[in-house]
Image 1 (cartoon, rainbow, N blue to C red):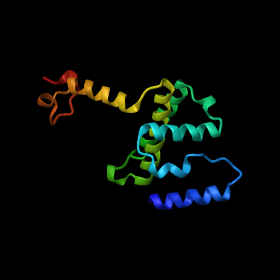
Image 2 (image 1 turned 180 degrees about the horizontal axis):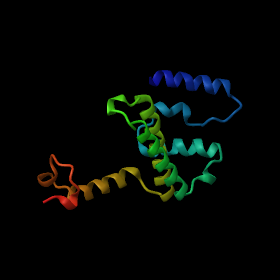
Image 3 (image 1 turned 90 degrees about the horizontal axis):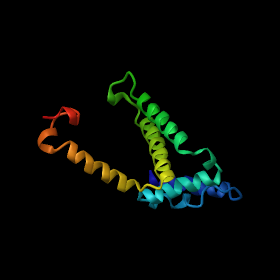
Image 4 (image 1 turned 180 degrees about the vertical axis):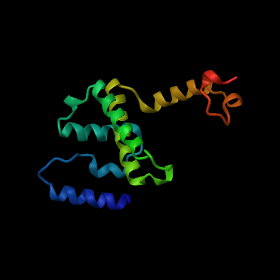
Length: 140
């Protein structure tokens, strides 16, 4: 799949030599961390001058809307009936807006996730939470 994507990127770059697509697009296959991914998304947006529309409120709304579209993939279906390609597409949108919102506040994704998991570890100790879906306020 990655090789096919790279080939398609090269075709696009060749076809649109005179049009800026994104300087980092050809390196997308080697991106492996949130910082690189955020930069890639930002470069894409900056090339189109869309940043003017990306304030925290609108990014949060877009994130919520994309999450609703992800949920829609499962609506009135058994989980296995959801189309994986649609779930993948909507999940990517959720991640993109998540990256942009974190970037807008200057937050490192890895740090905020680690911080939240530390909080969760206190709220949901293994000895109380294992095997139950109860909220931490309901754990005995």
